[in-house]
Amino acid sequence: MRPYFTTFYITEIEAGEAGRVTDHLHPEWANLRIVDGVLPASELRQEPPVAGMAGIVTGPTSTTVRFTTGTSRIWGIGLLPLGWAKFVTAPANAFADRLCDPAQEPAFAPLRPLVDSLFGPAPDEAAELARITRHFESLSAREVPDEARIRAAHQALVDPEIASVAAMAEQAGLPSHTLERVCRRHFGFPPSLLLRRQRFMRSLSQYMLDPSLTWIGAIDSHYHDQAQFVREFHRFMGMSPRAYAALPHPVLAGVMRARMVAAGAPVQALHVPPAA
Image (cartoon, rainbow, N blue to C red):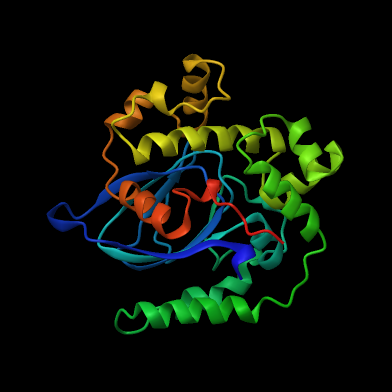
């Protein structure tokens, strides 16, 4: 199952006397999140907020998702592009930068039984993880016709030395028009935007893991200058680096550190897929 997922992960939030906490998800691959407890309100930039959903599918994102939640347990299932191709029949670009209720969206009908049955009468992390694993194993017979191309494109994308679509296509061994098609259908975005997202997330992750760094110290070497990075920060996060640094990160700061230890990458976009 490793080629299809970033991680299965659980986040336990204790909101304390405040009752609610707010944080910002970073641009990432698609996710299914299943919530037990206070249901979150989530908001993609420039879109109306959605709330009251125990199951939330987030398509691949190129922007932040602002969320507010309370005391809860949240299981997350991160779908790599190959996982999207395996378990979702619809093209990824149809759900890019979207929040969906799997109970309402036909493309996610296979996920509904898991949302409905994941939690028992009492918290049981081992039993819940076993239910997630069994559910996806039961869906795993579906073949992925583009599998070799998806793997090749993804390996090229996560190479920090790759900075252009031409270089990505060459490393993946794919014609540029084929790379474009594969990325839009299975990754959610064209390769040019995916490469920009990788560069941005390498920079943001560096800063988040070591807040003693200045932004200058965290900026990826493929940026021409600080002004370009600031423009990209507005593109992906909807705010300036200074404004983001001033915000509390009650959920994501801890999640990124834990994910770095457990999975070797602090954010899903930087997850290196296993080789074929």
